[in-house]
Length: 313
Image 1 (cartoon, helix red, strand yellow):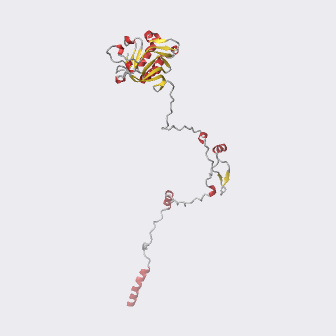
Image 2 (image 1 turned 60 degrees about the vertical axis):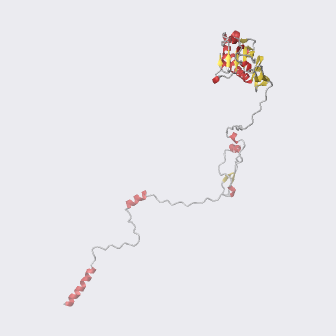
Image 3 (image 1 turned 30 degrees about the horizontal axis):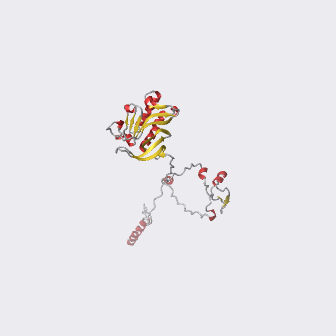
């Protein structure tokens, strides 16, 4: 009996071990890297649409070396035949090493290519240091002006120390207008008279009577006092700075007389315009309305005035 019980006790554990467990045991983690579980099929398709594919860089291809025969040649289509001939381009094509039609090297560009292209050419600017052209003096000119004709006189001395001219000239004509009597003055005064003729007298007279022919001179250099008054200051005539004009002769033989025509009709207006022009040019301008001494002539002188404003009466 005891032996039977002992044997039964030994068989019970074996029966319990042979019975399957209700749950299986969790396997141990694998030592390799654990991969994430695959997503569901719908998610996998969505991810496949959204995620950009990794671009595989294309292998770099080194271009083949250009054949020596093709160096310096152009593989472009030829121009229009006429244009090609004009620009010096050969129309014939030659096959290259690979059977490709290659055009020949263009000929040298023609010299007048800018004219062919319609480009306007401009003349080169003159050099800044180019020597000035020599001006040939005109026979009879004085004061360095071909328009002033006469004779160079030089220094003029007088008994009075206040009189005299350092460098005098004897003027015979100015700007083609003759002087009835040569005027002994300096070059500064001669130049002022020329300006008055060109910018005052000629515009005032115009073509009336055929234009101005001669100036009737009433006085130039004279060593005397002002208005011949004893004890007065030396006149500008005594320094070669003054000239007196009594009348303006015209080419038709008529004249504009300061004494007879001042303030009368058309001639009077031309005389007044000539007198007014002198006020803008000379240092002193006197006429019939200044005083009795100048009722029969215009007095022009180049005496300097304060502030550059001339005396005009």
